[in-house]
Image (tube, rainbow, N blue to C red; front, top):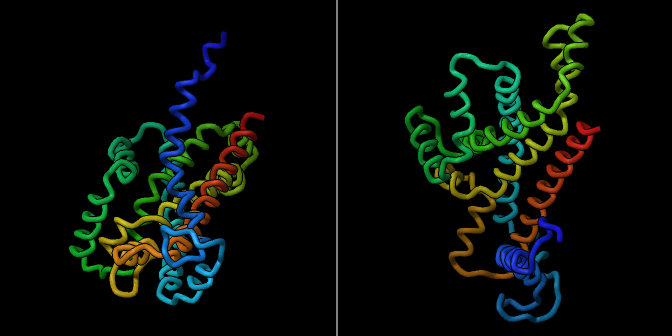
Length: 265
């Protein structure tokens, strides 16, 4: 008997757990194609609510704001996270390493309410107006730690012989970084970017603290509308958001698996 073979109880618990997590999402997606205006009454298959969604100016503007914020914050988080990963994985023990590691990883474990409130107090203290720029900075802060962890894991799996060979052939540290290290890290960096993009795209709590006039993100818009009642248009917008996040997560997973396969080869 295989000791690692899952038992009936294990399989049942897994099925129930996955059903509890994903059945509501599946119901939301299905009812986004509901012809009826009542979200609890099935009126037949229809894509009418996607057409209504495309004509909803405020919702489309919020989606555009979310895309801009997610892209800018992911770029900043990727740059800072990659530099932090290089410092942690390539420079061994240095003075201040422990507090530096704590600062990088703190947003990953800190409750978002605390992070949002802390950033709000910081922006008020230094005189930064709440708005689009504040959300970008806040989301970049939130995503940097995740990027650093992903890239650092890839760095530890790289063959340093390639970097040492380039250095032996006369390449300086910056040239080795640009021509050897970063190309080898490209899948990990891309995965970190997509992870930071996803975190920014679906964030509600932090953005609610630091947003201002004209800087309403899509999750904020959906939350404000759902307080007045759920309608199939919200289901359609949520389905598109789920698809975007799913594609980003899937791409990040594929890039990570591809990098792992190359390292194993």
